Image 1 (tube, rainbow, N blue to C red):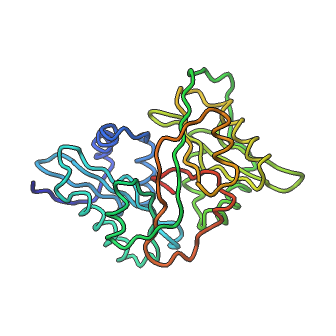
Image 2 (cartoon, rainbow, N blue to C red):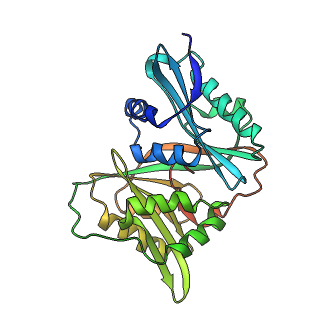
Length: 280
C-alpha cells in the first residue's frame, strides 16, 4: 500500500477519532485538540487514497523532554510499516528541534518496535479498571483556587512544566481537580478526565497513603461512568493495593520508555498513577 505522511490539522480530528474507536481507546475530541494546540507542527497522519489510516502525536515539555502518543494504525493497514514510519517521523521532527529526550508508554506489542528505535525501559505501569453501575453527579464543581500549588508541585514530580495541559484538563473536568493539605503543606493532588469509554484518574500523586486514599475516594465519589481507568506505577507502595481493595482489576501492562538522556525523571516515587499513556 502506498501512503504519504503529513502534518495533522484540526480537520483530521474526526479521522483520529475513527482510529481510536477502532482501537477501543478512551480519548475524546478534546484530547486531540490538546495535542494540536500544544504541537501544531508535531502531530502527523498517514494518508492513502485520501483516507487517514494512521496517526502519531507529540508534545514537548519545556524542551526538557517530549512525549510521543496516539500512535494508531487502521487494522486494515497494519503490517505494512505505517506505524514505524509514523514513529520515525516523530523522532525526526523532535531530533530537528534538538529535544534531548523522548518518552512514551508502550504496550507489550509495541515495546520491541520502540526498542529497535533506541528506546529504553524506565519503569512499568499497569492499567487498572473498575466496573460498577453508572451514577448521576449530584453537584457542580469549580476548579480549586489552589490549583496553582498543585501545578507547581507537578513540575517537580513530572520533571517538566505541563501546567497548560493540566489546566486544560482541570477546566474540562473541575470535579476531578483534587488537593490534599496537611497543615500548610500540600500532601498530594490528582486530576481526572471524562473519556469516551471511562472516567480516568491521573495524575494521582501523594506523599503518604492517607493522602492517596483521600483523593482516590474523592475521585470515586465524583466519577459517574460505569467504567473507571487508573494507569498505576508498579513500584508505587500504595497504588495497586488501594485499587485492588476497591474492586479494580488489572487490565493491561504498559512500559514507560525513553530515548536520549533521561535527565529530568521527576519523582516517580510519589506518583500513584500517570495522566495517561498519550500524555505521560
